[in-house]
Length: 334
Image (spheres, rainbow, N blue to C red):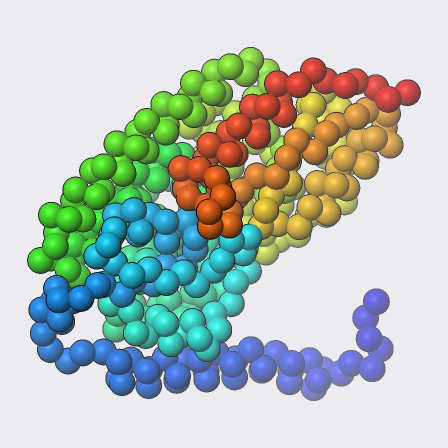
């Protein structure tokens, strides 16, 4: 319920607070750049020490670690379970970005609320938006995403392989002395990803085509659907910044009942309440649908767990999806 004591002046004052904060962050960033950036001999100094790389998401950081190996020290801004669509840079993040030798981020508006900082940082520090290095003809452009490209490229393993190549090229650019190291690490990892892609296709093939219907919290799995033959329905859009409404819940409820879908899925970086609302609405109509499990969408799992790496995350997701959708539909509860 709206606060009746609010006024237009109070509203304008509240709107100025984020602008003031961004101004302070950018001033801090500029000052830190002048203090931290070397003025000469950049390649020579990097060749004698580890490269300082900053990555925005756990997914991007994992790729940088695989390619960089012992040559690169990786700092990740967003931890496991963090939604990059809604993440806002802190003062500490600005300092980390300013002291980096190179920055890697997904791009394609995934880190939507960090856009201003990332644009400014790229003027002074080498920054690579790995998804934006991919040929646009290979990208999805959902009409509901206001003409922008779908940033969730990692759900198609073969597209992620192209992102890994962008990481390799970025590291070679700032540390050419050790280019052979990055090339060798990337070649090894790309071979592992090629094997992973084949494994995903083999697992999916165990599901009949009519069972390949994936209902999730937000529309992050479009590339997965295109690459591996699924229909995907998300309650929220490509970005979690847009919340689901009653009509969205009703539409998915009808879909689940009509198609007799045995399971729907929550995500680690998105609130489960909307998917749980669909489950309740389905139950109210006399049909039983299970929560098939928790999928990793915009972030990896905790370090040391199966989903703590990209390869492990893909395997965990596919195992969860195939197991849940292979179940016999439980049917009417009446």
